[in-house]
Image (tube, rainbow, N blue to C red; front, side, top):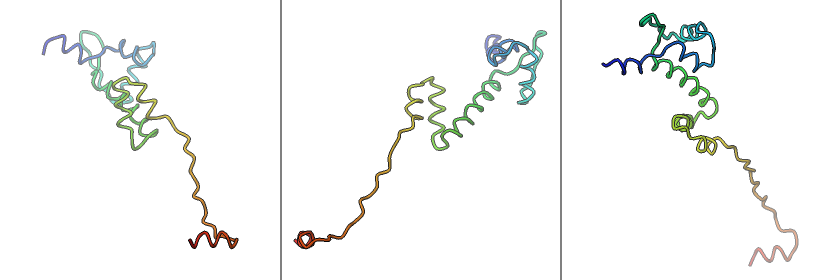
Length: 119
């Protein structure tokens, strides 16, 4: 494994802070501890595994999709991964479908209506 691949596998706490939209590295460390993501010391820098961070972030959005659409969450996640807001919008748009009522069957009252039915 070359050093470039290793850099892609690990993420510094400063970069994790940017992803989590926090200013303090301690917040990122607490986030990692909360989700049991290990923190490594590499060249006097705190780092963690990029894969585990991305997995945890995706796990949270998958839970949201499962609540929103239990039968179609995989398709919504696919839209998210492909960054396709148009397909996502079409899939989640709620259409107002009015239930049509069946006409009730009525018996003819007049003689003409009864004769019409016989014919």
